[in-house]
Image: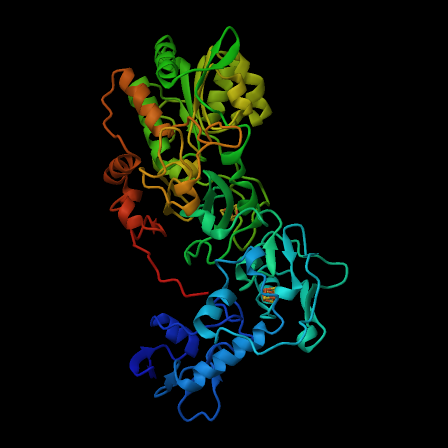
Length: 562
Ligand code: SF4
Ligand code: SF4
């Protein structure tokens, strides 16, 4: 270890670290634009200049390795003056268009202007003007005037996304970020440059001008686009998700997420196809009904079949809590042995960075909570065959659009009873006799287990009809506090959806069971008491970064400020 002194305090640090890393590890912020913990060092912004004893000039903390006995000052007069000079220099040609810039409110340049600049400019010449709306690729727009030439986006594209298409051209104040001729920024991870960009030069074509940052609430969650389970922030305004952004978790996704997960997974929550309430089939047509009627109909219909004629298909899209209660109700209350789920692995659809071929977020968890046929029961192939041959007459399906598979689509009309938990008007829901409108990943508490066995939390970011954002513990933005919860036509923006495990509990109790759990947290407590992979876990110690089954390690690792 090397003993170094920073601002008068002595620290023992790894001699392989740079000064900026050693300071960050010990809670000392050294401002920086171009340095990022996961990218190579470029050292071009000069914002991290520090004073090091016995060095004649100020040194950049991002590329200076610590040494035993080193004495560093990050707040001396020389350092403060140098930072002010760097800020003044960076702002000379900056358009200062914060009022119309998407980055305002989460902009490093804006924050540092408050913290580290003198608050006025001596520059009274004309600014250099550059292109304002350059489409770098399908998902990213560039405003060249706002670029401070930190090169983070270039290094990300070269080093992480492995698509080296970005570069600088020209010199001095005329430098322009651009793509190489006949190329565009179009890779599976291209949108990560938006958060990496310390200013508003790179913006999302999808989110651009949709909302000011401070009008939205942000809730910690996970992506449900594949079995990686990247950690995310869910950004909501007026009970509608406007964007997902990656959240740091070294054990899962580092600082990144893929464009597909970011752009596609939340569409279901906002979709026009969302079910507004439970439905039952009357005279051949699905009609909206209340929960009591839907549950009573499910109970009476299920009672009219022999146990062996009923099968249940769980879902790797549903939470551990949903699947655990489902297999328990199917096996112990309804009494069928025929319980399984469908896997959704797309061959060759994964890559080496994050994306997994398994397109479900909770396949491992579904198995771990006991979704499998009981002794002598039918697996998924047997269930399909049973429906085709008529031995399975009633099917209960959880949150999976099994009719996307043409074999199921062809077999489902053979059933006498089909009960489906669905959040949208899916193909399977259209075949159903009873549709129970379920809360999406963004509307409920729960856990999912990623491919590597990491159990991670979902938290409600969007309220359903039975919930009140103000009273039920939702993250609140200023907008939530003052805006109506109705859309522009006066309709409620909330859906009449409920968590699957809770509807299943109601059905089971109406069938004579005595299930007691009233919250997802209580269901998880029961899972942790009964099932070894979850031993020792609870909603508190899973924290914001989850835990691995085998280690039950609590992983609230400190994020290194990026
Ligand atoms: S566009 Fe943003 S990330 Fe890229 S060089 Fe400019 S300031 Fe840096
Ligand atoms: S890699 Fe998978 S979990 Fe991560 S953002 Fe993409 S789809 Fe979502």
